[in-house]
Length: 318
Image (cartoon, rainbow, N blue to C red):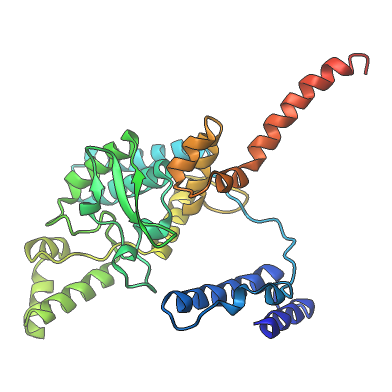
């Protein structure tokens, strides 16, 4: 691992890639070896050794820390509500289903602090907790979600009333056949066709019978009638969706779209200004130190205001 870190540093020095990329490569290997330690394959993680990590190139770039602002969220809601109203005014309830789903997704991201991987499907991770949030793990009455957290433990995330209202509306329109259905199913038609073919094939259906069914009935009806759980929207799909929504709503943040993780940071920024402990609880940080480190810019700003007040009295003549 020390030799690997040295090789990464050499490649950064030669301009082959950035220091941030080199550190990401190393972190990936380190995480893999951590799993090996947990599974008892090796006793210690060689990538965690100081003599190895000190060889890594120093990453001096400023991290991209996008925050959703309340104005951003309101603009998204206004755009989605307009799309919903237009479809309902035309009597197209089926056409309103997707913007209603999208509004519930934006509301959940903006108000709960969940990570995208906790509620969307990870195409590279087949664990149950990475296949998208299911209705059975949503408690609309008490206001809680059960998600597989970053620490690989099942956790309860808070669900405020604002998100609950949008989720209830989404549930009523979606009408899932069972609580095992994903809260945010994909609208990608090829994925739905593939799922139906696979599920009915496993139940013994002939290929010709499946194709006839697909020709005669809409996928939504087939999924509900035969209790086939559709796949959840993927993490990448959620990013693509947010990019599309921002383009249509004319929202731009430093030349980029609103990324899902920016919603978590935006909520934390909002809550931290009220209470660091509230932000810690909502974001499910194990340590208050993590919360303070993430929002140290707020502490610095408030300290600057306090210092300004002191200096205004001391420097009265300047």
